[in-house]
Structures are given as C-alpha cells and as structure tokens.
Image 1 (cartoon, helix red, strand yellow):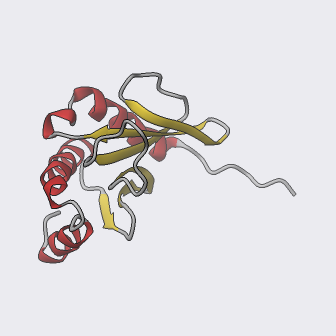
Image 2 (cartoon, helix red, strand yellow; image 1 turned 90 degrees about the horizontal axis):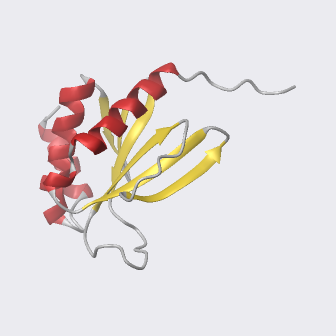
Amino acid sequence: MSTPDHDAELVRFFSPMPEILPIYRVLEDAVLERCGAVDIRVQKTQVTFSDKRVFACASLPIRRRRGWPARCLVVTFGLEYRVDAPRIAIATEPYPDRWTHHVLVERPEDIDDELMAWIDEAHRFALEKRPRRRRA
C-alpha cells in the first residue's frame, strides 16, 4: 500500500506527532498482513481501514483525557459486543449491538496478538453485518 502519495499523506497526517508514524506503520503492516488488500484512506482526523465497510481506524488524540499518555496512537475498532479489557481506554455503544472501542498504543510492541485479534474480529464483523432496515 506504500505509494508516494500515501506516504506523503501519512507524513502530513502525523506531522503534529511525527514520532507516532513508525508505530502507525507497524499497525498498517499488521492489518495488511492479516486482512489482505484492504482500502486505507488518510482523512482529516483519522486513517481508516475498510473492506466494504470501515472496520478500524487510527488517529492522534485530539483531546487528551486525564491519565492518557502525552503521545500515542488511538486505534479504534467496532464489534457487536463490548470488550471488557484493561487496554480498552473507551468503549461506547453508538447503536444497539454496535460497540466502538479505543485502544491507546504507545509503542510498536503494543500492536500485539491481542489487539490484532480484535481487529481481525472487527474486520469479519464489518464484512458480515447487514445494514439495519429503516422503519417506515
């Protein structure tokens, strides 16, 4: 997925915290290795990973919360249930049975089997979930 345009977009995106870019690259490599050729889009506030639908995102913390590290990568993924684990910094349920989880990643080693298992599951969930029907 490394093209000159993609690399330039990433450098621009991570310019507020350039030391986080190498950590992001570990995440991107792991996602591509495990999920195959997914679409990666650098947007204004996040980098999205999608395959039909978005299943994971990477972002810089816009507003730091008390106790959060000064510099980190926020890795976000969605599942149909809430993951109850110490690594989950925030979990919200924006829609019934749609849980958004945020994990703070400070070092490349934090992109480990546990985090990638959640992302694998989020990828499968995004591929399988059906859009909810609107009521008339």
